[in-house]
Amino acid sequence: MEGPTLMPSVKSACFVIIHITIWIIVPQLCHSPVQATFGTTPNIKHIVIGRCFTYTTLVQPGLRYDCEEIWMQFEKAVVQQSSCNVTEEHYFEMFNMMPQIWPCDSFLFWSKTRMLMHRYAAVFSHFWTLEDTLVGYLFNDLIWCGQEEDSGYFDFNYCPAWSTCRTHPVYSLWKQASQNFAEMACGNITVLLNGSIVNAFNRKSMFGSVELDSLNPQRVNYVNIKVVTNLEGPHMFRQRVEIKQVVWIIQIDSCSQGSIIELIQILWTRGFRWTCTESDLTLVILQCIQDLNQPRCQMLANSLLQQKDLTST
Ligand SMILES: *[C@@H]1O[C@H](CO)[C@@H](O)[C@H](O)[C@H]1NC(C)=O
Ligand SMILES: *[C@@H]1O[C@H](CO)[C@@H](O)[C@H](O)[C@H]1NC(C)=O
Ligand SMILES: *[C@@H]1O[C@H](CO)[C@@H](O)[C@H](O)[C@H]1NC(C)=O
Picture (cartoon, rainbow, N blue to C red):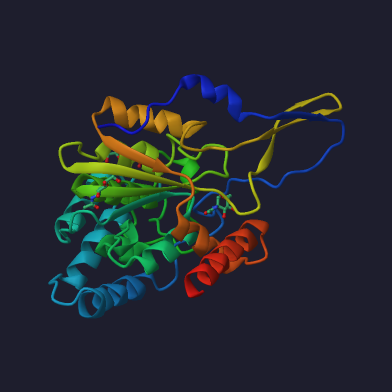
C-alpha cells in the first residue's frame, strides 16, 4: 500500500545548470539557531514559570503539573553542568514531571517551514506540533546555559553557539523533547517540508536526525508529506565557483526529485506507508494571503472566481 514508486533516475533531472560570468553575492541561507553573542534569556525563571501557569490554567486546563518543581528540575539540569556539557539525561527528571498524551492523527512535524506551519496549525486546530506540548510551550524561543564552571548560576552574558558543543543545553532539551514527541506519534502524521531550499529533507535537521528515527511504524498509519515551495518559484544558489565563473543551480525539491526521495526511501525501508503532495490547496492559499500579487496567486484567484461564476449562473 505504498505511494507511487519513484525512479531514482529522475534525481538527475533536478538540476538546471547555468553558467554565467558575473559575480553575484548570495546571502547566506543558514543561520545558527542560538546566537553566540547572547546569554541566557533575561527573566527566564519568571517566563518559564509564567508560561507553565498559563498553559495549565488557560491552554490545557485540567492538566496538573507542578510548575515550580518543573523549574527546579530544569535549573538543576542546567546549572550543575558546565555550559557545553548538558546531555538529554540531565533533563530526564524534568521530563518525568511533564508526561503528556496526544490524540492520534494530530501530529504535525515540520522542517524549515516554521511561519507557514504556524498558520497551517491555526487553521486546522486539531494539529499538534512540538510547540503545543508543555515542554515546547515553556521553552520556545528561549536561550539558556550555565556558567563555564559548575557554579550553580545561569550565564546571562554569554552562551556558546550550538555548533561549538556536542551537548549544548538548549540542543539537548529540544532533542529529547523532539524524540518524546515523535515516539508518541500515532495514526496519520503530517510532515511539512520546504521545497525551496537545498535539502528539503535534511538528515541533520531535528526532523531528519531525531524525529524520523523515533517514529514507530507500528503506531503510525500514514506519513503524509506536504512539500511547499515559495510562491516566487525555486531559489537559486551558488554551487561552485571557478575562475570567472559561477555555477548556478536551480533547486526544486519535490516528491519525485531531490532529497525527498531519500526520505521516502527511508520510510519505505522502515515499513511506513506514506503519501506526498506538492500543491496542497490550503497551503498555497495560506501563502497567498501574505502576498496576493504573486502570479501564482492571481491565477488561483481567477480560477476560484470563475468557479464561483459557474455555480451562481
Ligand atoms: C562533562 O560531564 C562529564 C560527566 O557528567 C564529566 O566527566 C566531564 O568532566 C565534564 N566535562 C566538562 C568540560 O565539564
Ligand atoms: C523556505 O526556506 C526559505 C529559506 O529559509 C524561507 O525564506 C522560506 O520562507 C521557506 N518557505 C516556506 C514555505 O516556509
Ligand atoms: C490517513 O491518510 C490516508 C492517506 O492520505 C487517508 O486515505 C486516510 O483517510 C487518512 N485517515 C485519517 C483518519 O485521516
